[in-house]
Length: 117
Image (cartoon, rainbow, N blue to C red):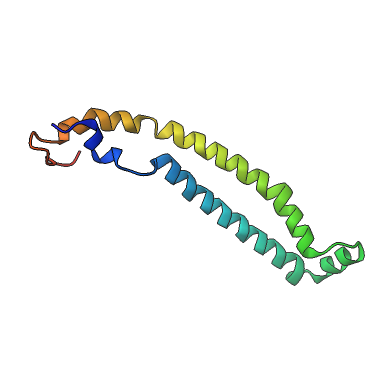
């Protein structure tokens, strides 16, 4: 029987939770950029009177967009990332125990895979 260091789940260079966290953060970042672009389009293109009012007050549409993303989008993204990280941690907690329990049943005496679990 193979020892624990030679099992395939030990050969991954990055934990599944870290991979999921990175993908989750990239998806959230893309969503934040999409919302930012849409907000800029609504302020600058669809409603030019808002841009004129902002210019009269000494502001720009791009500056207001930056404030919206900084004070609204960034904290929301951080809360979503932290919450998602803890949810993934809780959901994926039993996975290593399952691998340790079932791996010896899958490998045959000569070290080849007997079948899928």
